[in-house]
Length: 319
Image 1 (cartoon, rainbow, N blue to C red):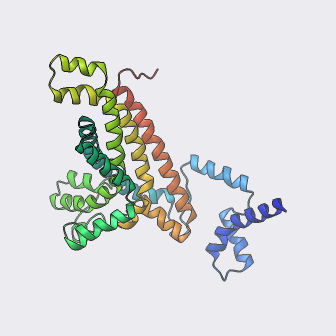
Image 2: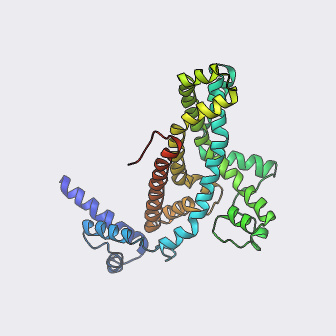
Image 3: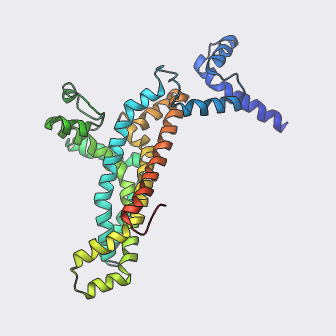
């Protein structure tokens, strides 16, 4: 009976996309024809290896709703997601590393307690809640920043993207109005997305700096009269960069996948919002292609981080 239920469930799961796409009023013949068109009438093992073969050819299929190739959709949308993730990571690095250094230098004093409490709060805040609060505060109440989108309609009429990275395109064209507008639209979603990496980087930096500051070479540099600034930056921070770079790579990869909520809240036209729309519309190739792209990007980013280890620490050598 267990095997029978398992087979029944597996068969229904394979047929489910065809049933959904065909609609409630579809006849069994129409559902059967659609299953054959999508290849869902083949054995599950055959479908899996067919998918792997298509993936090796960079063929992710077509969207069931729009009919556009998944690769084309990804090519159109990935610059928005990468631009947002890069901006969020820059904010996290610019604020998280100095906060961690200050916390380490003031260990067990009030700045340390304040910064670590703030980092704990940053990790705990839900992204969707923080995004809505920032929109209400800075877009609705104060009207300082736009609530959503990548660029204003009036500016977008004359703006011509080159690479798809709007900030870079505005710089290349030396279009100052577009540059200011792009930055204004980027600030709220980037800060929202970068809050958790910021908090994690602050805690990791504090831990790495405390370990580095306790080493003998730090005491030697201090005994030689090296200024405190150079002791911290040239000796302690340089040796604490290895764990910081590791966390940076991991968090950047996480940002690519974690941008779904942020892109949805701020109507950001990237991969995350596209995957979310595919989930709502049950567009399985879109969800599948988006997840595969994010996974590949995550792996490539971490490989790049591993390569940079040799640049940060001369003791690390790849032979």
